Length: 126
Image (cartoon, rainbow, N blue to C red; front, side, top):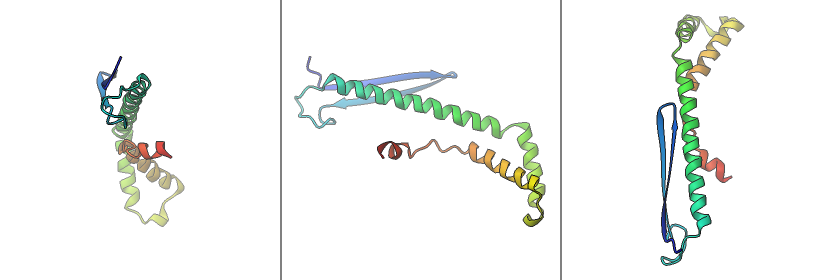
């Protein structure tokens, strides 16, 4: 069988959301001559890459959803009000508990701004 191009599609569903990764391979992309068949192993690697990307999308979705849930809770609204009162005072007068409240709110707000780890590819290459 002489395969000179291929398309790999991975569909993944989670929490009523659908994630799709579509990768296309051809001989030129794999540094092969145009008439050289693509090895089945290369197609399988393309499939695995697509599956990993779909899995990563689901994991990032879970993290973002969790961060939004944590950041929008009623207790967070109370914490924001408390921190606003704390920040009205000079920082050197804050008690350890007040400092902890400010830090906790900062952590919650940071988690709600999850960045989807766009640098993941650079980490994998090292």
